[in-house]
Image (cartoon, rainbow, N blue to C red; front, side, top):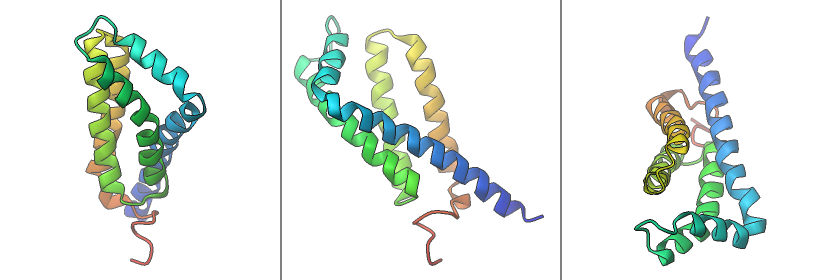
Length: 134
């Protein structure tokens, strides 16, 4: 049995699921962007987060999620996309800790672990645009 191939298939499953999840987080928010921005901004009232920063980040977030998700899904610039996703999750965790939303932070930590495992095992990213022609 070729264990490297089995691990590559497992990695593909992780990468596809993480990519679809992030891509769809962004895509579904874009058509209702103003409502999304309003909701995010309202969530930071009463915290130290400046309103302008919350608004700017809320406009940026869906596009960042969609782009990162697409890159992970197809396996293009995978390492950089995974790193960007992990950093984005860290920023989201910072925001949720300001809101003291510990349940969401716990869920976000699952994403962080997913990004960690995907980065840690990139040697098994055999079925991707990054590996095409190699």
